[in-house]
Image (cartoon, rainbow, N blue to C red; front, side, top):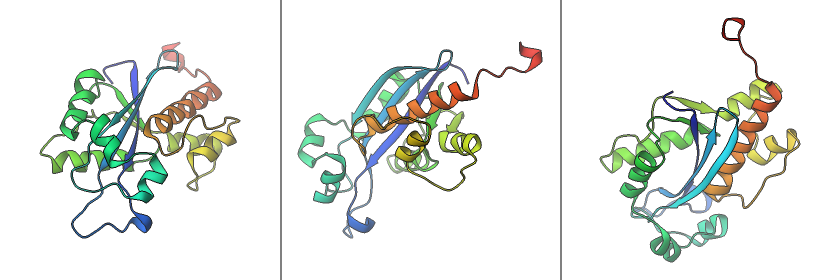
Length: 191
């Protein structure tokens, strides 16, 4: 890692009931949630939402009900995908910061869409799946929701589920709480 800052990522994707898209559409990112955490004192510094204008799919009523995003709102408030990539790299230092997520899927999907647009990944090599850390800490290896993970640690989900900014903030809260519970272990040669 080249920085003491971490970017906690969550994505919202276009969606249809049962994942069945019209033949001429494909799933794509409609919101990037990014929470910045200072790893030195495990403090949340900022929470951002980067809405993304869809170009490969429509926003179904199902998706609007789930995420709160409408196609009109995304077109008004969103940025093109290329701009979202630029913001991650230039404004949020994504190449030099630890990328934290709640699954391996968000990074893979982002990198797939970047390749579709002829872009390289905006992320560096360092990545942490907080679900793995949670499983190691709790001994619970089956897949459970973010809300269930937080609840197991005595925390309540803050905000609106399926909004990328709130989800990324809650993933960051999970990271901070796990670090707090694990203490500040330092090998003897570093103490």
